[in-house]
Image 1: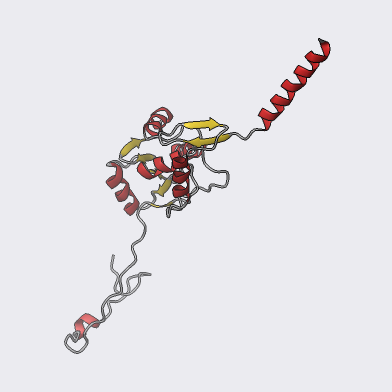
Image 2 (image 1 turned 180 degrees about the vertical axis):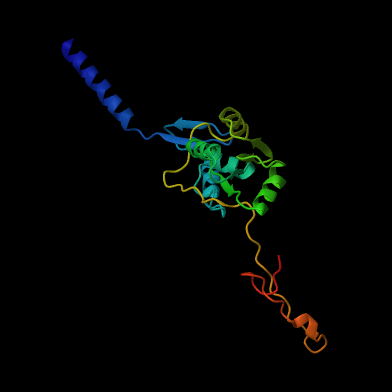
Length: 208
C-alpha cells in the first residue's frame, strides 16, 4: 500500500509539473475582455491583431487591440500651460493609466484662441476624449470618462512605448511666397517709396 501510495503521489507530481509547463495564451476579444486559455486565440482574433500591427497610424500600431480601438474611436487630447501644477498632475495621470494622448501647449494668443475654439473656455487643463470635454483636472470624472470611452482600467502600453512631445495648440502657419510685382505696369511713386525716418531705436518705417 505504501509503494502504491508513493507511486500515485509521483504521478500527481509529474502531472502538476506538466501542467505548470503548459503554455498559457492571453488575448483581448472583440468585446474588449481579456481571455486566458491553454489554447491559441481564435483565428478572427489573430487576424484583428495582425491588422492592428499593420496599421499606418504609428501612434496605435504597437498597441493592444482594445487600446488601439479606443484610441482610434475616442482620441485623447490634453491642453496644458506652463507653470501649471494641475496640468502636470493631469499629464502624469494619463501616463500612469496608460492613455495614449496628444498634448497641446497653450502659450500664445493664437494658442488661447485655439483652446477657446476647442473647449469654449480659457481654463487649463482641458481634456478632450473624442467629443467629450473635461474642464479642469478631476481624477474621478476623468477616470469615468475614459472608462466610458472603452479605455482599459490598467495600463496596457508596451514597455517601449514613448509618449509624443507637446506641440503648440496653434502651430505657426507657413507664409506663402508673394507674387512678384509687375514693375512695368505699376510704377511706384516717389512719395510711396520714400522711407520714413526712424524714431528712437525703432526700425525705419515704424512709428509708435
